[in-house]
Length: 95
Ligand code: FES
Image (cartoon, rainbow, N blue to C red; front, top):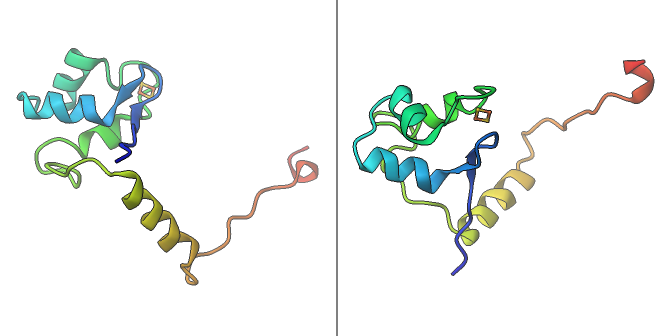
């Protein structure tokens, strides 16, 4: 079994597992996560994701994804014919 380590907060190298552990130990707000782990204490880009692990959030109480689940998720996305292709700007249009 391969366990995927997913980082929630890149600035502080805080993983999903650490956030879930903090929530299971009583964290109920983003302030709790900031105080205990340092989540959302630098650029703040992770705050919305971290909030989803708190009680009432979409990831609250979910177990971690395993590699097979990630693969299935990626396959589903790759075969989604309704998805719009991502268009990258050319360097010429940015100049
Ligand atoms: S990614 Fe969490 S503070 Fe920047």
